[in-house]
Length: 81
Length: 395
Image (cartoon, rainbow over all chains, first blue to last red; front, side, top):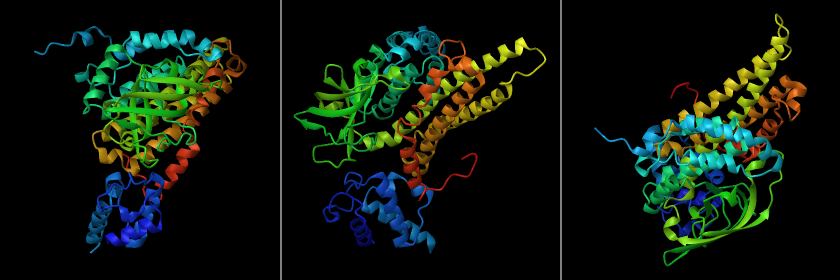
C-alpha cells in the first residue's frame, strides 16, 4: 500500500522533492506539501483506495507522512470489511 | 488564603479601562483619519491602561483574558476609531501566537513577561514581495550560525512598523527549506532596521500606517519559535485574526448603527405620532447587526471549545468555519454601514455632523480585501472538496 501511496505522490507532484528521497516517516509538509495540494492529494487517495476520509481524519496529523496515511487508510479499509 | 497579586488588585476591569481609552481614541479619530497618521495618543493610553498584555497568562504576569474577552475590548475600541482598534487587534493576534505557542520556550516566556512589564506593541511581517498576501509561503529564509540568526525580508506591509516595539516575522525555516516550510521569529526593537519601500495613502484604515519596509535583523537563535509556522498559523493565528478582525468590524458597524438610530430618534421627536422615514430601515439594520454579532460570538465560542485540542484546530472543517467567519463578517459590516448611511442620508454623508458615517464606511471597505475574500473563498472551496459542513446546531 505504501508503494501505491508513493506512486500517487510522484504522479500528482504532491511534494517539491523526489519522493524516493523521502522515508516513510518524513514530514510531507516540510517536503513542500501545501494546503491546496494536500486536498487534491486526499481526493486522489480516496479514488485510488475507494475510501472516503471521515471528518475526524481530515487533520494535518493524518497526512503528515506516508506512514500516517498508510495507517489511516488501513483503518478505513478494515472498517469496511 | 492566596494573596492576590498587587498588580491585578489595582487594575480595574479591562472593559472599563478600554472605555477610557476609547474616549481618547474617539477624540483623535477624525485627525488620525484625515492626516493618515498613527494614533499615538490612543496607543499611549492603551499602554498606560496596561491593555497590551491582557491575553498573557497570569503565570507570566498577564491577566489571562480569553479570546472572546479580548474581542470585546476590540469592539469597544472599534466604536471609537477603526484604525486604532485594528492596530490593537493586530497586536493581540501576535500576542495570541505567543500565548498559544511561546509558553514552552524560555526565551518566548521571558518575552511575554517583558510584553506585560513594558507594554510592548507587537507588529507582524508576513506579506512579502513576490508572494503577496499568501502568508503560508515565504521567499526569505532565516540563517542560523553559532546560536545567532540573521534575517532579511522585503516586507511589503508591516502595519505600524515604525511604531512597534517588536515584530513577528515569517520566513523559510532555513536557506534550503521549501517555501511552505516556514518559521516565525520575534525581532525586538534594536534587533532590526527598517527601510521604507512603500507608503500608506488609502481609502480607509488610514491610521494603521501599513507601510512596506526592507527589514534587516539579527539576534539570538532562541528568538525563533520552536514550532513550525504552519502550526502557529493553523492553531492560533487564523482563528485569532478572523475573530478579532470580526470584533473590530462589529464595533465599527455598531457605531454606525448607533448614529443611524440617533438620527431616527431625533426625527421622531420632531414629528410625534408618526414613524420617521428611516425607522423601517433601522429595524432592518439592527437585525443585520444582531446577525453579525452572533457570527463573531459563535466563532469565538467555537475556537474556545477547540483551543486545547490541536487536532481539532488543525482540522479542515475548523479551517473552513474560520474562513467563513471572515468572509461573512467582512461582507456584513460593509452592508450594515452602507445601510446606516441610507438612514442618515445627507447628514451621514457629510463629514462634520454627529451622524457622519463616512469614516466608518471607508474603514469597513478594507474588511473584504485584508486577506482578500476571493482568496479565502477559493481556499474554502478547495477544503469543501473533502470536508462536509457540520449540520448540527450543537456539537
